[in-house]
Length: 184
Image (spheres, rainbow, N blue to C red):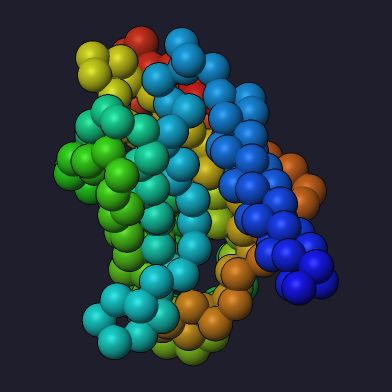
């Protein structure tokens, strides 16, 4: 009977420790004055239209509504064959949707990347850099989404790796007046 009591006690302690660590991790570094602390956009994969798609994942864990305006993409180090158009290496995906608190909205980036790469007919690789423009309340923000080395075949993403070395982005004009650069 004492062994069973000891095992139950250890299980209760382990569950309590797990909950405490999860709560601490969620709250550590959370600045109560930072409006963007609960909004966690990232680049990742989702299953859209029956295939895995390279997407912008707008994860809103804050109680505030977030207006996602657009994501601007820049392609560098493009290697592609059999393109049907001249590559612009730039593109803008208009989002213009509200993300409720506690909700996650996936936005496919496959078409805008494909168009910016010049509509290649075979596999192509490039470094994807992007900037998300969004609003919380009356304040506008811009967030650099980082750089990823991607390999695609048409609209289908084959591989994505985080690019560790910094990518030099071309100069650009500010999209929104008074936009604040949000921390990552």
